[in-house]
Length: 112
Image (cartoon, rainbow, N blue to C red):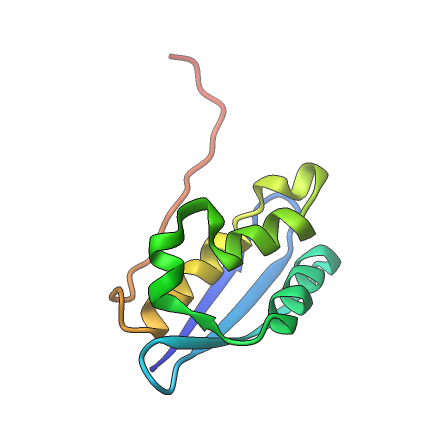
């Protein structure tokens, strides 16, 4: 199965396109393109690790390869980047572990 997630990361203005594909319904490979150098670095580091076992990733929690690679690659203000979550969601769809559905973050300044 194939999945595509397009992430418009917010105030930085960068867009990242995440293509995820699984030929066996479990192991997922990614092709990630981005205008952001840090997201590209994350993508290269993730690609260097080879295919990702979607089943293991879902049960791994914070020890997931995707999330560990993000923590290693995205530092400073990019620590809260939404691209890794987009990668994780694309992996779930490509591995048949989730149906495709948009995720929305609406960020405003607000007083309670």
